[in-house]
Length: 188
Length: 186
Image (cartoon, rainbow over all chains, first blue to last red; front, side):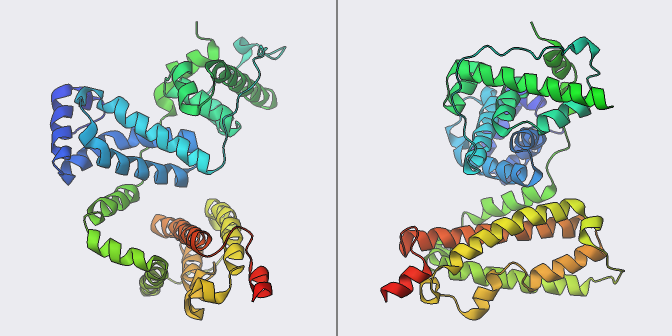
């Protein structure tokens, strides 16, 4: 049976691979990589916004996975554990590029007047392009919340900001995406 | 309650996924993992790491030149910006960063850098490997292997320059200690 991230969630299979990895079995690590690399690469690509950084970050993250797998106690939490390592490496890549996640004043983020989502044609391509064009800080918060499904509290801890800042940044990012997609609808 | 935007993302979540990474990521990873067991070799290299790094680049250049000249298929050359705009774009980005680093390294006197003229020449952006890759890319713009080699070339060059700068800054001078200041002092 080919190992995938989905069936690796089955504890016995995950436990077997983790145990073999702990013993230094490179083939087991390859299986682990093949199961997770696509999903983890997508996280890197969304976070770093370019292929070259995404590949470098993925490589560094898996080196960390290899070094630290002995510390993993519960194979059941393998997916979340790898994902967290990958996300941390993405954030380090961004920090090296001098992306700062700053506190913002707590202000009510108002939806732009006249934006009626019901009138929009949402498409994957339009949303992807809009997210790609966001300022890095906004994109990071939006990706972590919407795609990686971390809570605002978890995001705040990762970025070293307050939970209310994380929420505000997310609302602003979302609003910005709406504006860009709206603009795309108008010019189409 | 999720709004339209959030609802749309959740409904189409899978469509946002792209293909996995290129096979070169595993290749590099495997090399890194198996290489890490060669502790003694690494510790020896670390003593003279940046001479070793430049020598490694020289050897890689020789290999790349051999490969590309051997496999050359002459075709009509065209402008890289038209043939491979994405590589051209990456080139602009990396060239600017590489030139910044080269300028910083250039500020250090030759005696501090400790590299002979051949090795110094190798640090330059447009060395023989670069020219060979550029030529091959123009001849075969769709060849993924050459495109990847070009990007990797930029990345390796940038990494090497970063390491040299880091070493120079740590061991030889405080920030702002430039060639002019050095010359003024002696």
